[in-house]
Length: 448
Ligand code: FUB
Image (cartoon, rainbow, N blue to C red):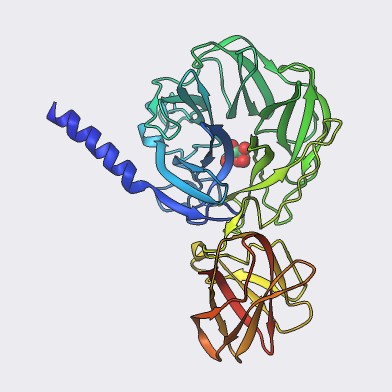
């Protein structure tokens, strides 16, 4: 009895300790690598179930490949502040998984009758000594979106592959989609743990080039089968539409072009939250030279009047309002002049984030949209300037009102400088920041 009590106390305490808060634009999470975001709206809050890329190390995964040992879940009520609820499933606690495979690939989670079903692919234990396992799909069940999740003892029978996605239609029928070269689908029984009937291969999709990561989305009676596909050299996000969840599908368009950074994979999900559609996807922001350490992002998605999807152009600014009182990371800009540049603060410590270099030239400005102001009196900037310069923060509205002028003393190290601001109306403003006299490097700005 005592042992059980101590165990559950430990679980609660550990979960409490694990909660950390990330404040971000794109990427959404900046203190660890994240990929393959499956976003869901549960009880009025957005939950994201991504994969978790880590770096290979001796005895930990294969260098140069994906190394993924567990999953975290994150949530947000405003799409700006993300809470990390900690680890929910690890390869070491899945009884049928090969704990040496580090292959906890793209998951999904769905709610049904007050339970949360978390689907994840990973490699089974090898059947023979020296043999190799195969990708199968497991399920873990919880009473809350953040767990604790109870892992089913066996993977789903009759399903081999990766990238599970579950869709529940308006009539209550659930479907499981997954991939392994092609995209497959099957009905799920009401218990959400077993498939019912035949597995279908969705053949009426582009034939040439890898397709994976299916995500089914229903909008105004149309079924959108969305998926990453290698049409050229790396993945882009495409969609095909149908009047039925199992097809036949008709290729309809591209949701997002190939990643400009060259990140080979993309993997996405679509949600509607508070009247706006969002695309969650990934890139390699925190690892520009190794695309298997990825980072999740979100941007707004819009349907055209006829039901087609407008192509989503990836942004750094992402979604959600930024509070004027927070540390505003202007390197996640909405637009910039050609001479303004963004770099890591320290390339050896990428999780410290980025800085903006603003030269005192015509095209040295940066614009950061959607900052929510209450009453503010001062602004603090974390800056440095080799020669000593002046930072001007303006309202991007046509009047271009000067909000603050910050004299940055000459010096080679970061410092925080606080100055009073001229009156700024409460509400949402877009900011333009530029340097005068000499270049200024900015880490963040924050109003008080
Ligand atoms: O994250 C590992 C794999 O890369 C996913 O399962 C695929 O969808 C691709 O994103």
